Each structure stands twice: as C-alpha cells, then as structure tokens.
Amino acid sequence: MINTSLFGAELKKRGFTFYSGVPCSYLKHLINYAINECDYVTAANEGEAVAISAGAAIGGEKSVVLMQNSGLTNAVSPLTSLIHPFKIPVLGFVSLRGEPGIPDEPQHELMGQITPEMLGMMNIKWEYLSSNFEKVKEQLQRADQYIKDNDPFFFIVKKGTFESVELQEKQLTKHANYKKRQKQNDDQLPSRYNTLQVINRLKDDKTVQLATTGKTGRELYEIEDASNNLYMVGSMGCVSSIGLGLSLCRPEKDIIALDGDGALLMRLGNLATNGTYSASNLLHILLDNQTHDSTGGQSTVSNNVHFVDIAAACGYANSIYVHNLEELETCIKDWKKHKGLTLLHLKIAPGSKKDLGRPTIKPYEVKERLQVFLNG
Image: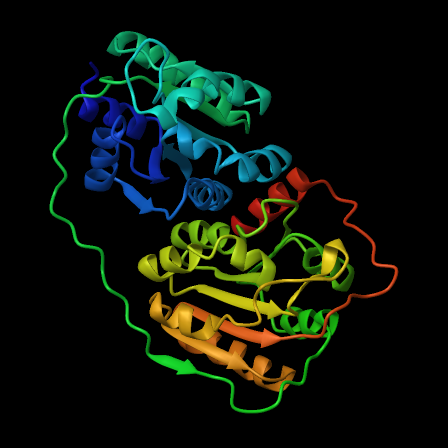
C-alpha cells in the first residue's frame, strides 16, 4: 500500500493542488487527503468534476480529477469533446471496481473489464498505479510530462492501494440567497444575437466570456472574436462548471458563463455545486428559448422549470428573472459593482442569425489565447 500523505505531498511538490471529484471507496483516502490538505471541489457527477478541473487548468492550476470507473461513463462527453479538442491537461485517478478475478458487486462487472479499453479509445494515456512508492514517483514523473505537454493522463487504481487517511471535520459553508426576483412583466423575447451584443458591449479588460456549445458560441464569435472569449464545442451542459473552476482560481477576473436551457437541464446538478462553492466573481446568464436551436428547433423540457427558484434554493446569492435587454444591462452593471454568485434568467426568441458561420480558430488556440489574456 502507498502512504497516502506521502503520495499527496509528492503531488503537491509537482504543483497539483486543485482537486475535483466524486467519492469512491477505493479512492476515499486520497479524497480525504485532498479535502484536508488541498483545494477540493465535490462535484455532483464525474463529468462535472472533469469540467471544473478543466476550468481550473485553463486558469493555470495543475488539476486532479477523481472518480469511480462507473462514473467514467458519465465523464466521456467532457473528456472527448472538451479535454481533447481544447488540449486541456488534467491528471485523473479512476478506481478499478469490478477488477476481473476480484469479487465485487454485479453492476461493476462490465466496467471492470472495459475501463482500460475505454481510456485507450479516448486517446488518454494511462497506467495502473503501483503500490510501490519508489515506482510511484517514477510514474508521477511520466504523468507530469504529459501534463506539461497539454495532454491528460490517468491512473487506474486497484483495491487497497492507499493507506488510511482520516477525514478532518470540515463543514461546507451554507450560502444563502439574498435576492430572488420572479417574473413580473411580459417578456420582450429578444433574439439571442441582440442579447449577446448587449452582453459583449458591457465587457471590460477583467471579463472572461464562456459561451455554451452550439449557436451561442457561434453568434458570439460573429459579434466579436476576442481573446477573452471561449467558444465551447460539445461537452453540453458544462459551461458553468468550467466557469466555477476558472472563477475559483482566478478571483481577480469577472467570469460570465453564457448558458442555454437545454444545456443547463442536461447537467442541472451544476447549480448545486455552484451554489455550494459560491464564487462571487461568477455570473451565470441563462438564455432560455425553450428549444434545441442548434439541432433543428426541437422543444426542450424547460417549460415547467422555474430556474430562478432552483438557483436560489441551491445557494446562488442572486437569482433574477430578466424581462428585457434594458433590465439585462442594468443587472450586469449592478453585478460588476457588487458581485456575488448570480443567475440571470432571460427568455429569448427561438431561431438564430441567418447564414451563421463557425469559428475558424481551433479550440486549443482559443484556450491558449485565453490563457495569454488571463496572464496579461
């Protein structure tokens, strides 16, 4: 077995201090160490943990993601359509529940057989983590080189690898909702393009704009291709999680996550995580047209969902229904003055700009350009 505290110290020595993950009995002692000694964000699901770690990595942190191999299936989308195209380096630890020849619960049987193959099919380099500490140090050196080359690297962890670490008593802060405003007037239903023009016009040299996948990013790109923009491709539902990771490690910047109702519904648990860690420099703007606009305008299932109530119940400091572009501008200006984790929910018209193009800049170039902006 590995002395977990020594292992964690070795990771610290190499600069890995930001962790996000979902609990697993095989990894519990490493998770306990991370909670005790490092910056650890408990995620609602494994895909969210990958996106949070990705946001922190974009912001300059060397990030670690922890998960059970059953949760690797939940993380496939951000691993393949966020980590891969943007070339975001994260160090991963995935447990090997259902290891062939080791008795385990029936739900782990298939995942135990295919975990290595799944990582390989996603072009993620991996190794089984040794239980010999001297070999482990050599493994970490190899893994660190992949991270330095902007590639992810994963360790598969077998049962009984880590020695016990007791979890120190630590209560997460309960964050209250201070301002909630429900719908009070008729909706103006502006176009998404006109809405993004207003948002973009209000940015300054501290602002980072993260646009959810699909036509939101494409329209923002046409309005102004700027170094402080990130246009997501794939990893639907992850934009506010990227925003959380980035905002936690870059508190001097104003992070604006531009979301859609279909995307947010896909990973609604993000709201609970955002509310728990409550980054005051994160503004979450929901553009709700009740359609999957990028795939032909099919209806979403948001018509009965009260996003303002949900965000408020999850601990967003401010959760505000916005009726028109004038209110949107006022709310953004107010947030820039007073901060606090905030959701702005605006109903917009379905449809998009005609003859809408696509970004010609590659995703990893967008990331690299944003990192230059962050460090400027």
